[in-house]
Image 1: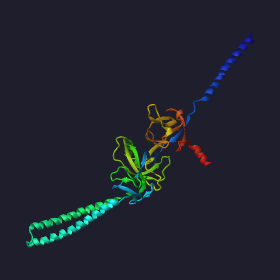
Image 2 (image 1 turned 90 degrees about the vertical axis):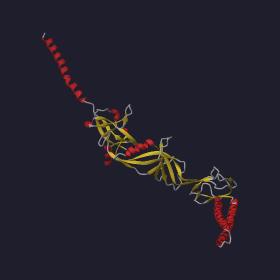
Image 3 (image 1 turned 90 degrees about the horizontal axis):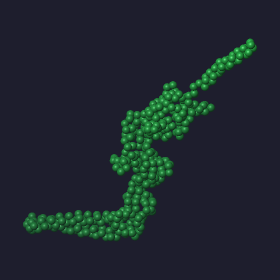
Image 4 (image 1 turned 180 degrees about the horizontal axis):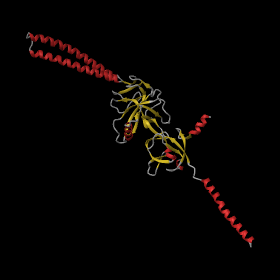
Length: 397
């Protein structure tokens, strides 16, 4: 009977020993798993900087001077004395209108003046003689007065004939149609033999000055209001009058322009204001009517907070926010206000300050309150993120 009892006792001991012996093993597995490791995120350290604030406006090129060539007198075109599309100078002869009728009118006016001058001399002598005779009662007072009146009338006629001669001279000069400004002349609408009139509505040709060239730009009135509010800040100073021009093909015009004028009223139809810039155009690359874009230096923000676009998101209500690494490496949510886009970055007016660690990589993996492992990164102008530590190591090697 003792053998079965000993065997039963041994079995029970082994079973109990196996059960208690397994507890340390289970405890060891739990310790190995422990808490989940902190999520690694890339952070951009916020620092204020001095940033130029620019705006890009659309516009068209406009000739700085335009003169339509029109006849001042009527007649038949005898000659065209320029090449279409060529450069012309102020005072250069462009067209010759048949001058025969105007030469005849000038000669007649000159003859009339000479005749009036001889009549004036005769009237003057008679007036002097009668004035002496009336003193000795050689003639009546009435005859003396009539002689004096004739003399005064002859003087008045001289002025009239001089004016007629000057008019004839001007009309004769107008038969030579000259350029009123320096510039490049376009296609002629008339040819030799054509009849032109002084009041015709069609220009014979048009001269345009290309150097300098104007660029008329349009800016929304609300943008102008925003700029004024921006310039009211202590940290913001006015920009320069420099203007950079972007041509139709996307290339940058090599010469800088200057902002010259701003329209004083808002266009009621478009709600915009017209600005005029002036560009040197020595090679004639700019032609009137070209569609262009201009970049204006409006202001300089000396305390600007500029952050990568990757670090700013919007919630369902459209509000902008950012995730930053706060105390104890925990994620915090900040409501921010975006001012404008600068390249691949946002200019913020509120929400972040110097020293904040903005999460720009790994934002989709964390939530406010999450513990993270921040890694300092840099963001280049193209928006690419670089690990600062890795970049330093490569530079050292």
